Length: 151
Image (cartoon, rainbow, N blue to C red; front, side, top):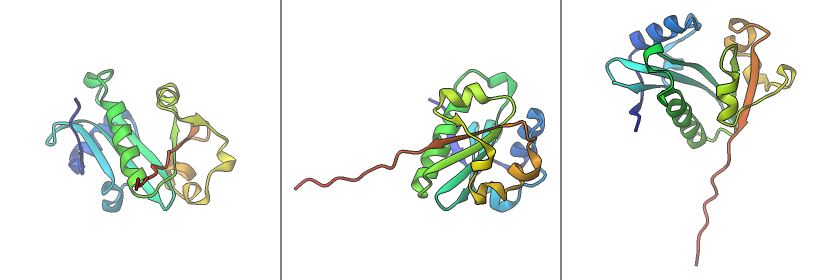
């Protein structure tokens, strides 16, 4: 079982993003509040972040070090991000990717038109300027967990 944990060290986040060629220039302490790491808490092998906007979220910065790819770290990170998002009332998670469309499709994400993005997602730096316009824009609708009471 993968060790997935909140708040990976900032140095690890920037290192892993840099190795993956992903943007980190816009990351603030507020962004890092919703990041998760995978592996060692001191030197994680992978990271993922979420930007929360009421009922929608942007999954960003999923990156796994090359030595650990194919071992389930990315899948475990996305599962944790989804679980956290759901606990915060998020109903849809959006993402942009240039290289991992098939990976995300296997996890239940579907490509959608950028024109249909919620305003909160359109306002993010990731959507508006950091990711190229040819990036795949994807969404996953989260199932709302219903609580039932029996009498």
